[in-house]
Length: 336
Image (cartoon, rainbow, N blue to C red):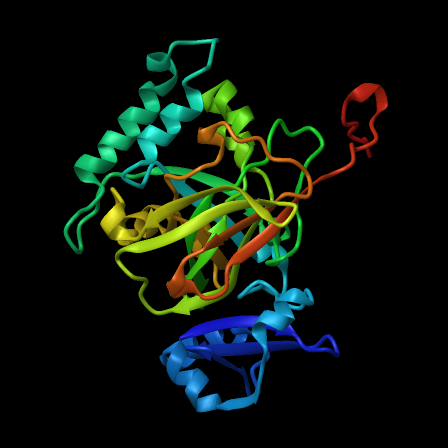
């Protein structure tokens, strides 16, 4: 079952579910977040609760998408209580992609640039798939921002004026809501564009944290329950309505050096990420980047990624923000 959120023509939020090609409004559903909270409090499953609420009128989801009425598949009433994070070097092709990103770096040799990345990747290969109930090696981890960094499917991904680059990363994200006692509950999985600044990262691996502080998008639909073990998708860049670059991407545990459970453990082991009621969108990594193929994107280009089990494609155009007015070229901090 796929679940999404839209605004109806009057601007009211509606929860939509889809099995196959037919999509319907979920009756008396205030939001996906509220359905999840009810399930946590009653011990029921999302699909059970949705079926209990019942279905209303049919929805043309593709038309709603075209009209800009599709929202993120989950939001929090307070965007600061949504946390967007991710892991890297988790897929079997991750190391070669990272190598391609850095191969022309003139400031250092490839060996110097890639030493820590390759160590991290090999650690995952050796100990990223522990037996159930055991703990494996921790992955590369990064923070992208809170809910203010998440833009709806179809909305622009706005690269800051100071950015060196703005490139796509096609990923699968796990979506979670914490219960009253801090226990994380996984709702399902969605396509995600973990938009990043790869030129900044390429300058020095220690700039990775800076390169990830960019907007992102996920959805349009969320797959409830478990994801396929073998996920095949396509990532493309559209320019003037035509594919400027296109490449398949793989995800799912069959194509990963870590298990999902291991990545989840190493995120939620930190108490700060188990605050009651918080929403977490955790991106599991990729091995496919247009940047690794030396593709340069431009404002107006559209990032599009799709994978059959996850419903409608995720599309977002690229935009660039205007420079922030600052005295002397530097951002000025006021003193109280």
